[in-house]
Amino acid sequence: MHDIEPFWNWRHRYTAEEDERSPFFGQEHSEFEFDHAVYDHVIHPQWDAFGSSTLYLKLLFVDYDGGFAIIELIGEWNDLLHNDIMFLKRDFVEPLMGHGISRFILIGENVLNFHASDEEYYNEWYEEAADGDGWIALLNFREHVREDLKAANIDQYFLLGGKLDQIDWRTFEPEDLFERVSGFVMKRLGN
Image (cartoon, rainbow, N blue to C red; front, top):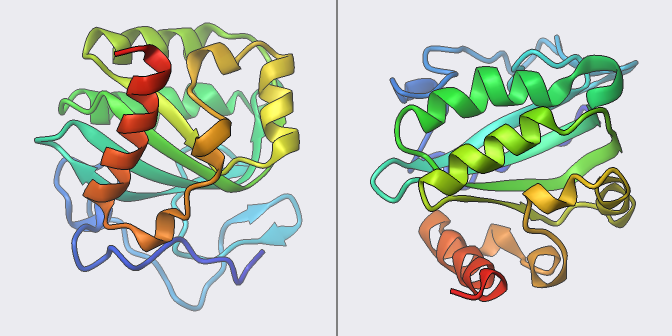
């Protein structure tokens, strides 16, 4: 896992470390010291920690005028043992929402497992995003992770599956990816 880097091709357009409104403003990354791990597997130092010991992310792009953020995830999403959704919601999502972000694209091809607990923070995130005409879309999550989300009835808070798992997102500019995902979302919501 140590050689899986966050997507870097938009860094000339946006870096969370230089964005004063980002939860990661001012953070510095080493290229040589591997200080984050998912259990006994170190991960690349460019991934950002947000409070979870098993799930990390990279804020790839934010458009404050457009009200959207694109986030890449890596690791194990474990609400059961580590309450990852609480840390994600309180320490990462809420600061972004405070700056007008209501549409979230979560890229999960590097999320290895999902372990559910309760739905409280998912419901809260969903309700707050919906108040701002927002949504939360999951792209390219592994089939068994999607099945675990469905089994826990958490899929009701996200838009996932179907064409959202067939997007070759790395070939898009961030605004174009947002438009593509938004088009799928609007079709599903019937708008």
